[in-house]
Amino acid sequence: MSASSGTLSASLRARGRLWQRLTDAVGRWPASVRVAAGVLVALVAAALLASIVAPLDNTAVDLDRVLEGPSAAHLMGTDEVGRDLLTRVLHGARISLTIAAAAALAAVAAGTLVGVLAGTLGGRIDAVLMRVTDVFASQNHFLFGVLLLVLFRPALGGAGAVMLAVGLTHWPSLARIVRGELMSLRERPFVAAAVGGGANRRRLVRRHYLPHLLPAVGLAFVLTVPHAIFHESAYSFLGLGLPAHQASLGNILADGQRSLLAGGWWIALFPGLAMLAAAMTTGTIAEYWREHLHPRWRSELEL
Amino acid sequence: MTALLEVEGLSVAFRTRRGVVQALSQASVAVQPGQLLLVVGESGSGKTVLAHTMLRLLPRNVDVSGSVRLGGQELLDLPPGVLRRLRGRRMALIPQSPASSLNPVRRLGGQLLEAAQARGLTKQQARTRLRELLDEVGLDLDVVGGRYVHQLSGGMQQRIVNAMALVGAPDVVIADEPTSGLDADLVDTTAAQLRAISARGAALVVITHDLRLAQRLGGRLALLYASRIVEVGPTAAFFAAPAHPYGRELLRALPEREGKSIPGMSPQLTALPGHCAFADRCPDRFDRCTQTVPDLYPLPGGGLARCFAHAER
Figure (tube, rainbow over the protein chains, first blue to last red):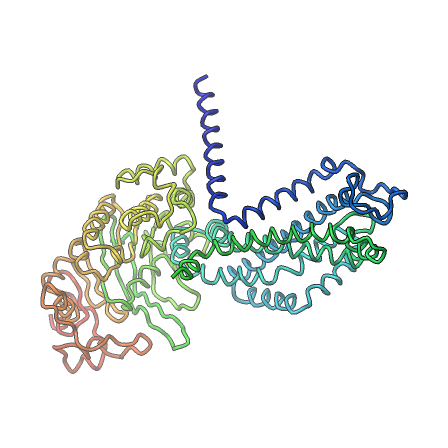
């Protein structure tokens, strides 16, 4: 009995410490980051819980209520076929954020993989991988994405093709950063010490290289997410992304552009604001993180 | 009698853009279990290269000839995988500057455990062994394990890397410049720790340019100058009466002796002369000294010196 209560109180204590550390960390954030984090959490929560927060069906057409402005019944108004805009924006945000996060993850994974391979293996493999990186980086990444969409949309569907198109066009810069970081890491004495202690290449990568790369890779992810949101919207707007009936921020914006001529300003405004909010909040957090990684800049500025 | 670690006729050269750097020429040393070998010389004389060649921690642009044998087994021909299992288990390196030889972004506990597991111990064994090793030097695994390397003092960092080297119970321990960057009072502590290591029965090779540490440690000493061993013998005999002129001048340069620095510079390793490398700076040189490289001649005290002054005996 005493043993089990001991484990319980220990786990409670551990949870308390974690909570304490979390609140301490939030306490150190500047106001702008706290606001951004709050908005982002609210946005993600609303998007995740879209069917609960906005219980109306996002595809339900009501031709009696076409192009109505914001009202108590429809907080963001309705679109040109009478669908509730709030519901569509929330569902759209869910899809757009998911695609953006998955695409950013794919880009970061590809960039890290190429960078680590080039940086640790060196020699000819490094040269080949870097030339491949150059080829990808020298293309206009938006048009290259369009090409990938055209090629892969039939096989993967809209959402999968957008992830692939964004993921495959946003890794080269990270690959270069990771490779450069590894070039200097490889010369550090603790790497020689680890090799002298019997470490093999896999252990070096896992235990010594990746922990050093984590901040740069994490930052690249957070910076890629807002960018990927714009890409998804742009591709869907062009009709290359998700099918038109499916709510995504880009699709709703495309509808909104048509309705704008009929006086329906709200259809473009609200998804635009949601997109801006998602991009701005992640951007603000990424910016703070980047500064946080280089505390030296600050002490120099404060001279 | 074959020694535990035996280096014979070892030459190491690096191919660089500035030409071939001859870092080590025809070096031969041997160590027995429980024995201490000091490798002394100024920076660039080849002592770290000697240590790293023993573990074959070498870059790709290197040419090695000669032989390094551990318990009769030739290390220079071993495939990398076999060599990797030897590192840490049979031969361990105590790296130069502990502060930069520990990963700054990971807690020490993880690094210590990982080092132990790399040497084939299970997690449980590793923990017990590390606890013992750290206890001996007055550190608590639970306390230092949660810290990062920058949170420890230089002396504590040194003890951590020592423990890391010893965790695999190696037969040979190679310490590379164990006192670089340490305060004078820590030199004594380090010397005591190193003596404790060789008291465990391991053969200990200490690379250093710190003559005070060398004098404290005793054992045997090999003096390197411009890629060659110029004198080998008991450390006490060296400090009492160095046989090679370079050793003599080196000791005279110590502040507590005469504090008189040696005139001239040691030769460039890309252009070593075809005669005694010290001839240009030597106060007692003969004609022969500027014609051929002297052999290692036996000394009455049991050592060897690379100087024609001892050729006649």
